[in-house]
Image 1 (cartoon, rainbow, N blue to C red):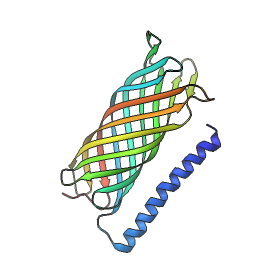
Image 2 (cartoon, rainbow, N blue to C red):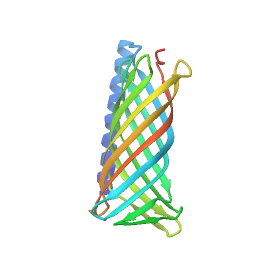
Image 3 (cartoon, rainbow, N blue to C red):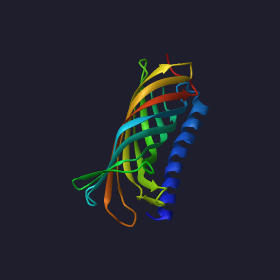
Image 4 (spheres, rainbow, N blue to C red):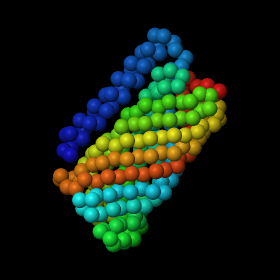
Length: 215
């Protein structure tokens, strides 16, 4: 993917999120709707099963590592919200499968799958169960600092799902635990083979809402 195209995708995504926030903010200022407001949610945890596979290249990269997600959005009403999201999985020393042969790579080799996008979330009140889904632009990157090797794919399309249970810490802050699943497909740089990645992770989360959360 050319740099110009990449910047265009980012610009259009940022514009989309900005328009939603501006429109919602204007509506809030006009109607004084107490159900609307800004929303922040962050999560850090562990993904025990991260897989990056290319059938065309006959190569699979797998392992477990750190999972992280950050969401910034706007409540449209008491339960429904829209948000922009950044997410990623990072692990070192992955297991490499080439054909039927399995190799353990050194810890100097790191791999990560990351993405950014926009989605919709829903709170089941008053149980404080959070469910969300987002469409993302995603890519895979690998680096070995010892060998001075670095490679990454083009941007592809992915989906991120999250289901969590939150507990009220204060009127505006929730702490929780969530399961997150992420799937994506993208082309290698230069029109190379197609890569598919998927991961499942458990996150410790913290959420904040400017309007507060219903008890």
